[in-house]
Image 1 (cartoon, rainbow, N blue to C red):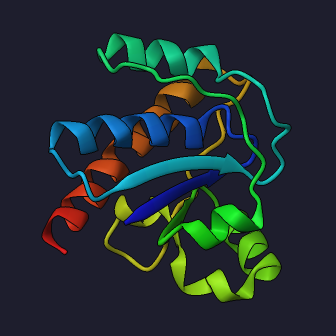
Image 2: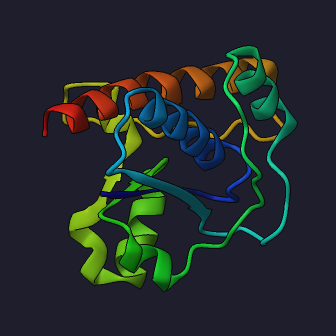
Length: 152
């Protein structure tokens, strides 16, 4: 199974989701899952946001090499699941690649059991509150996502 996390620039939210999921997949010995990330508006080659790197370091999670990557058709074709941070991300992907519609889901859907799905806020260059909120949202949603995948 191939999981692709997508946000705007691939330096903050999708980067964090990718690193956390890689770590959990390795810890749970889920060898049949591959993880990647990309950004809809990314410029390739940028390093991850230092605040997200610090968060991972504080959690004791190793950080693999990462440079931002722009979402391409090959990524969409590769992915079995495309997990986005905002509704507008889902809309853009489905508009650009209609055949990917069934693969796209919002990470925020794993935070609530209602039909109203919240976006994962973009903390980039905002306050520490925004970073903590995004980190909490992503961490909690990924636990639920991985639990679902463990039982599928």
